[in-house]
Image 1 (cartoon, rainbow, N blue to C red):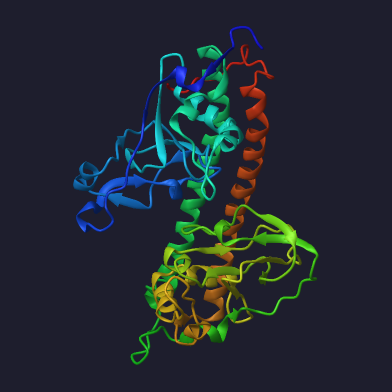
Image 2: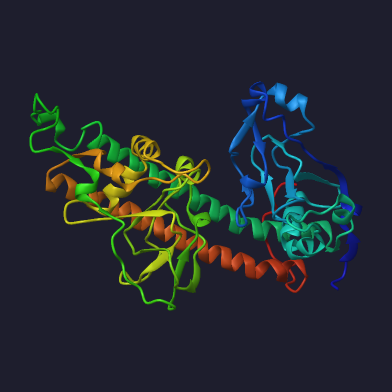
Length: 413
């Protein structure tokens, strides 16, 4: 062990641990307020800064439950389901009973504490108990044995690792802005009719559309669930529903499996969730992660695959699928038992889009192509950053790499 490092139990260097709770779901006065309420479903394996939550509670809901208000900058970890997941909150939040807020002593740097939990995830998982869902008791969490370097070294290690996360987070912000730019441009051109040259365009009094435009059924111009052949038992990229985002085109992580069943798709396809609640939650992805456009991937049978045709481009299709009106039309067509309802693809026969002349459609595809390609570049950069960070993590936390002489900016405690 390096000089100055020591073996301690986690509980020895924690000042306090705060738990949480859940307001009664039967009382509507407790929900829908302005206090972000965090549960395990808000946590992601590879995202260590929490910026938003799916649910919100009221002041009354907070007071009525055992939930605690956790101030921004606090390290929070899960003690049930996904043991060892952790994040630093970028906002004030309330937490539920499956999460614990950790407050370090002066001997422990707050940012180092985050990486300490992440580094020990496998240890925490092994300490969990339970037949169906594993949980870990507070006393067991406190007894976790760790190697603790001196405070200046902690700050340097945290600074190095957090620098990777800052770059990843900045790329995600760029991706969000680029997606918004593509969607807003789509809406300006094809919904609000403010396409290039609209000022001098003549509008048909009967259709309300510019001359040369038409109303066309979505299913007449898009290839819905196209037949795509891939050799059975070959190994190919596999996309589970969990890899599809509710608010972004990004699809990750990518798995590789032997092909058996499921939907088949290729670069340029839009994956639209057809089952509840994935559809209502907005799960929609754009496939562009494969290096070779001839490659075929496969995934959940609960996707509807939307593919470009000679009539309409792939970026127009994706942006259309992100429209709220498009999703509402699909939701209205759902059939099946509660909790297992699915979209009927016939709903696309009744969904009409504003179909522009070819030069306008082409201009939009050219404009969006630069945006979508830039997004994939940022996605690829993040993959490399995560790989580099994950390689460094065990080497830094174990003392294998000497950071004492490195010149790094320390993160705030």
